[in-house]
Image 1 (cartoon, rainbow, N blue to C red):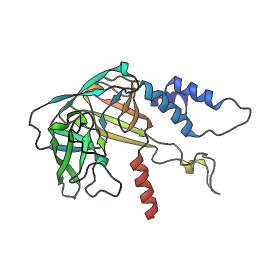
Image 2 (image 1 turned 60 degrees about the vertical axis):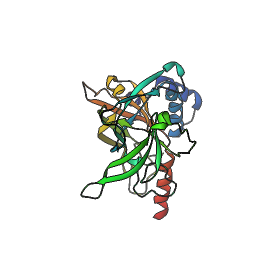
Image 3 (image 1 turned 90 degrees about the vertical axis):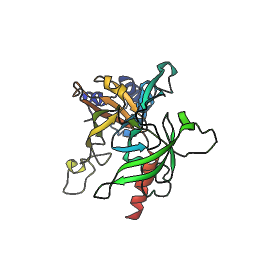
Image 4 (image 1 turned 180 degrees about the vertical axis):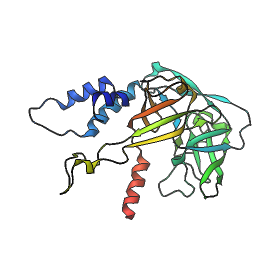
Length: 275
């Protein structure tokens, strides 16, 4: 709900709210402010203060066939490129990883540059990998991807100068923790909930998909030390906050605000064009 306690639990910062109030000013008449302005102000604030981490919300397993079994490499990851004083951390890399389901397409549409059979992508902070094979279940769904890696590309570099169009995030399967993630979206389908057709009321504008709860999400080990109220940027996904419902080894994250996803917009436009 759009209340102070509600947005605090979502991970909004007091600084972002004060900046938002300063920008919209004070008026003697009622007005409507676009939600996008509040979210933009929040992103500006969290971009400076939130540590970057890697989390996979809808996991798909990747097996790197030519990577030594049992080997683990620490990869250096930047905590926040906007604030060098936040330093770096180590993330473990191994033969089996989790990536996002959306980062693989067996038959890639036009304009899709993430992982697909025969293509090469850069793993954030790690190596370049190329998809060589897929494993499917009885329903024909891809449940595992097999790849090869190029040992000369550690850190994402390409000594031979070849170009790779996409970088995706990952979590080591052997080291990942699990979490529940609550994806909050707009509560209403329209900016003004009172704009309704005849015979209806504002409740008809409630968004039935305003909350999606994901379980079995994979998170990098550094997040296992997180405490309620801690804020993070899940790289490529958005800003998230640890919910008070977290306890012991059961971590719960609330999505505070998302990041812009260019491909999602393209895909949505393509689907709309087919209707």
